[in-house]
Structure formats: C-alpha cells, structure tokens
Image 1 (cartoon, rainbow, N blue to C red):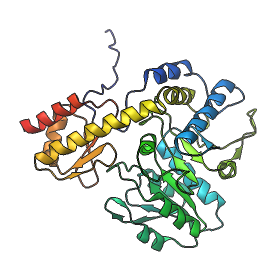
Image 2: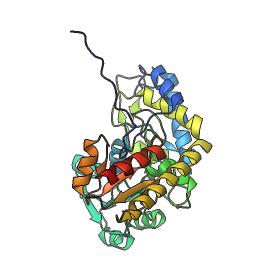
Image 3: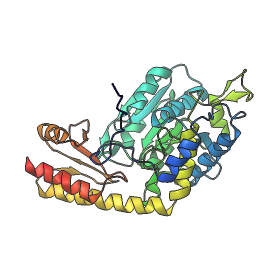
Image 4: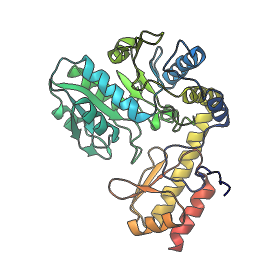
Length: 351
C-alpha cells in the first residue's frame, strides 16, 4: 500500500496558538541550517556567529545595548534557566521565587526541577499586585518575576515596581516577555531593560517574531549573570556551556535572525497594528452579542463564552482554547485575518 505523506496543521482555523506561520525568509534560513548545532560552536562556527547576531538583535528589541544570552528551545527553557541563574548566585539553602498567579506554567516546572519554593501573589485587574508580591519576599527570595504579555489575557505587569521589589531584597528581577516582547516596543508600556533594572528576560522569536519553531530566547543584563549557568564541556573544543540542552537547533537560530532582519522594526509594527485592529474588532463583536470581554490589552481577547459553545466551535474545526477560568481565548497572531474572525463569529451566531 502506498504511503500517504502527512501534511502539517493548516493555520486557517487556528485561533488560540501563540505560534504562527514563519516568515518566508525565516523558513528558508531554517532549511539551510537544519544540520548545524550551536551547542558545538567551534565546530559550527557560522551558526555560532548567527546566534551572537540573534542575541544582539533581541537586545535591540528589548532595550539592552550589550546583551548576553542564547537562543533557547522556547520560553519554558528560558524561564527555567533564568530561575537557575537566580538560584545559583544566591546564598541560601531555602530559595524561593515570587511570581504572580498569571505566571506561565513553566515556572512550576522550574520550581520542581530546581528545588525552589514558588510563592504566588494575586492579581489586581489582571496584573500582578505588587503590594502582595512585596509581602511574600524575604531573605531567601532569589527572584521576583513579572509578566509582559500574559498568556491568558495579554496583561503587562508593573515591571519597574517588580524590579525594585526584587533589588530591595537582593534578588534578581526576571521578565517573561515570551509572547509580548515583539509587540511591546510599539506600546507605551514600561517593560524592558531600558525601562527598569531588569536582570533577565524571556523573549521568543518563534512566537510573534515569526521565526520557525524552535527559537526561544534568554537574555541577561551581564555576562556575569549568564556565567552562573556555565559547566565544563571537556570533550568539546569549547571549554564550557551555559545552555540547558547540549545539541540545539541551528535552524531555529538562523530562522530567528532572518525573521528579525526582515521585520524589525517596521514589519513588526505593521503586524502589531493590524493584530490590534483585529482584536478590537473581535472584542466589539463579542460584546455586541452580550458576552463579557476582557481585553484586548495586547492582541488577545478573552470572553465568557460557554464551554458547550466552545466545544461546538471545535467540532467545526476551530482550534480555540480557554483561560484557567474557562473563558474563550483568541490570540490574534499574524496569520489571523479579519475574514477568519468574521467566519468564526458567524459560526458562533449559527449556534
């Protein structure tokens, strides 16, 4: 029997993913570098050079002139590594990390892997309650975390206040901008290294950056911070390694550089403005139909649509997810068009 080659997921009905179709230049670059490994930088020198370019470009986007960092497998790895930096530099046997309840689930993974206590603070209007965070901080706190573009509501925490809380406690300030980081430069938010004394940051080119998966990013304000991750690599030509994984994707590195080359800054600004227009249109359409709507703060809309209707929409092929409170969650990624949203709302009306 002749084998039928599988086809990848089409994006024409994907409305809740934080990944999108790669930019054409990113797709081509990924294919050229498929067999390269940035984890062995002296053997694969060209992709190592590209990784330095990627980190430099991410520094430009996030307001950091001389960034340290590397291209990760995604936001989870970057968040784990940032917590590892904070734990490794601290002088305590009982480290804890303070996060808002909106923090990504990767912080729970990090806490388990690293033996760190995770302390969660409540939200106020979908953002971190900094007074509550301050109450959770003590002499064993190694990191205080803010979210710049939460995965459920697109909210941006008060990053300068969070950084001040961290430094007053002798801890590091980490910002998770995995999703929001490529659009926040076009807003009035204070969120990046230039706006606040942030120490580490997660920002993912394979989300709004439109690079191919996998291409996440970890940035550190100084080489000294990143060096907290270093281990010896005796059988490689390079003497040490700061990354979590050994073998890594050269395709992701090259793809990230190609996407940022093609789109920063004008292309990302254009996509941000179009995405916000689409998100606002959807929010208005849902509100007009009587749904309670949250957002859009960034191009993400949540609404109190019933779970039964969400299941019916899934049965019609719409790939939609829910928040932790079971609200419909729509992320207006670059592949999401106004036509898609009109069809989606029409299907909602049909039921």
